[in-house]
Length: 193
Image 1 (tube, rainbow, N blue to C red):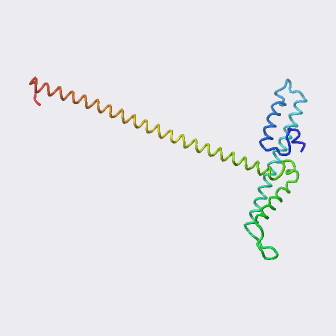
Image 2 (image 1 turned 90 degrees about the vertical axis):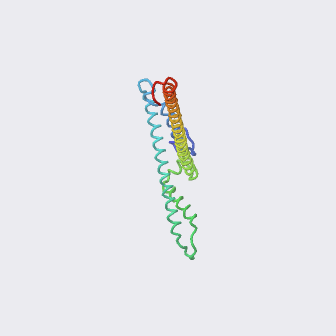
């Protein structure tokens, strides 16, 4: 809880909030930003860095506990063990129990980072952001492929047009040569046809 206070954050801070607060404070208190690396700013910087490292470690532990709880819940739901009365147990209930066990394993981690809902929300937001980036990359590749295709078609069209123009000039020159030969032969009588 003290680490959150050092960075000026509340209990519901996300991983991104922690990073942003750390970078702002680290930039301000970094010893290189002050003349001769004053002892007070160096000490403040070290405290800020320790708080950041603690919170990031706590976040990773909470995430690992969450994933372990999810795996336990899925493993239990896949087995569908029978209860004492012979009925099949509630898979969703066991999955939730796995989640709860995973978070309770972390002790202070869940208290530092907030509720399982907050952790899940952070992961969901991160997953959506990753999916959005992947989709933007895919769309960019598709647009680039379309642009290249249009450029290739345009280059092909230009090459075809240049070929047609050259052939037309060749045909015109040949026609002029043939006409000149006919005029010389027939009209002037200078040779044979």
